[in-house]
Length: 301
Figure 1 (tube, rainbow, N blue to C red):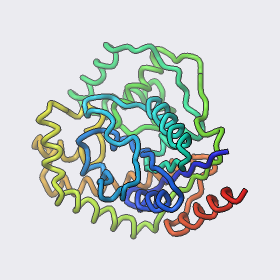
Figure 2: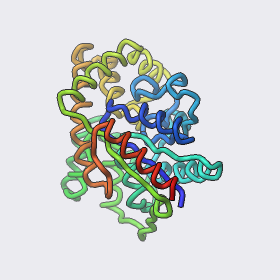
Figure 3: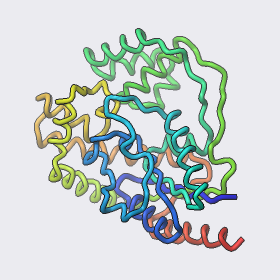
């Protein structure tokens, strides 16, 4: 049975560096499990690994779609399964790395590929309402008719809020779920750090993004006609910079909000990671040791 290693965890916790180290030592390739790094042109705000940082290790599911395109959990699961099969067919180790917990959980728990019949007019109506009255207005509509679903999604994740509204309104087809990882020997670790340390790393990371030109990156995307209705821009770092460029906040407040929202996201990441079956939470160096023991033991068998 082939091995698969999954490394998730806090934003800025060193997941990518650890994945590359493991890949170099155990003949592996990296599959990104990040919902923003799939987009071309969203490099700085997503902390996308650079060519130099990859150290000649092949990376998959990075820069695979244009920023105006939609990308779903279901599409990720299919793309990830294809990448896993390709890597294993060449005798290499798939190493999945990323902080998008929903992606990780869909791989482990299984993903329901049933879908509500698309109701484009319905969706457009609520996107327009979000633009006119704010994201919370649409979230409140969801909370009125499906409060259980509303509590699982942030108001700024407009696309998912509208998806849940659509399901609550029109219903859902029969479940066709299956787990991509059920036939593999899988280890899943989540890297966590002490709160003060990770918050300091986040603050430093945001400062680096600003210095690297996050504002220019976002302006370039806006110049291409993208708006906050595009899923890629409605993410931490991009959303706040868009609002600054639209004159809705000051530059200093924008930077402060990116840091604050990233810290808040870390809290949500920890909560979500605790719902992922068999995921082991630990600090990075402990994770390195556990992964190497897992791989060494299975190689001997």
